[in-house]
Image 1: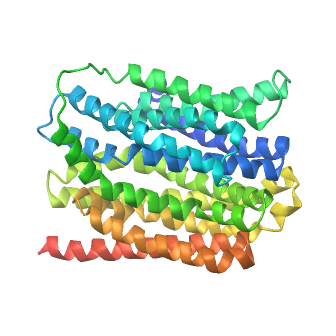
Image 2: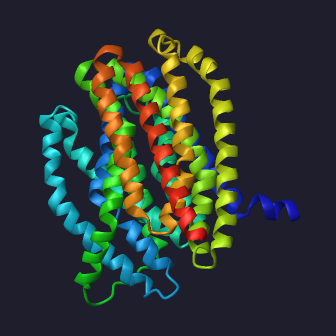
Amino acid sequence: MKYAKYIFSGRTINLFLRTLTIALKFVLSLMLIKSLGIAEFGVFGLFQSTVIIMTFFLGLDFYTFTAREILKLESKEFSYYIKHQIIFHTIAYILILPFCYFLVLWNIIQKEFIYLFIIILVSEHLSQEIYRILIILKKTVVATLVLFLRSGLWIILTYLLWKNNFIPSSLESLLYLWLLGAALSVIIGFYYLDFKWIQGVDKGWIKEGLIVAFPFFIGTILYKMMEFSGRYFLNFYFTSAEVGVYTFFSSIANVMFVFVQTIVIIELYPSLIESKNKSYAVFLNNLRTFEKQTIKFSTIGIVLSLLGIYPLLAFLNKTILFDSIFSYILLLISTAIFSLSFIPHYALYSYNHDWKILQATLIGALFNVAFNFLLIPTFGVMGAAISQLVSFFILFVVKVYFWKKFKKIISK
């Protein structure tokens, strides 16, 4: 009975579903390369990257303001925040979605996929926002279920349908199944928000939220620039095959960050932020726990990744991947450094030093773009990997510098 209670506890269910989701993302990469090839995987990688980036343009990181408001000691009715966030995002959709037309002109999204792209984009964004709110409300099991529906279950369905030849193995069928998973996650997640429509619109609150969220939005876009710009540079200077190689290695390396984010960051950051309201000593104690867990699981992630990469490449049997193996090692190191950067990041965030986070991110992004221009035309995938490593290292160093500087002031 005692073990059954542990097995079916919320933490265990979260860990299981999140681990399964990570594994399925990994399987998706293998499945696409095996079934469709490196070049087609490169096309998907660019599509996926653009969806991720555009979700942030639709969200404008407004959730960062909503999160703080909900977690305040004296907060308003929950539905008040959600209603105003819905209004805000509706306006964002009207203003931003028409610009998707330029993605076709710039040869980023194929013309035949643009409408599917827009529907997937909206579904992904809504699912992401619902997931974040559920995390803030500490409904972590439901949040993890939403994540699994959006990023995991449809991959299982794709594998079964492709393997048994129920549908053709193609990029188009994959995108429709992705849409199915994202849409289902929105429906399930919204049901568990317990939202009720209330009267009145507080334009001042929305305006304040936009002002507060704006630096986070710029910071997020700069983050994504560091993470994904290499794919767009490779697409411009080379072919879909090079994009596919870089996308594969960066996706596999990113599994380590998702691993750390799932087990450590998502679980601990709400408590870390709340502890700031208690005392500085309590906050530091929670920050040390956050730091130890991040270092511990980052190390585990690196070891597991290095042990698994060669058997993985042998299974895929693609010469172009073996030829670029050193790029993967560089990307893995850069991902580990990125994970560690969240230690000073959340320390600064907890004390509302948003502009310091933005400054650090801007510096890292500038280094990333500069090195991409310098290295990618000559060194290709290797150049993109070096650029990411340099920019993430700079990002980490600057954040640590800002936190130590603030720590000296607050300790006096």
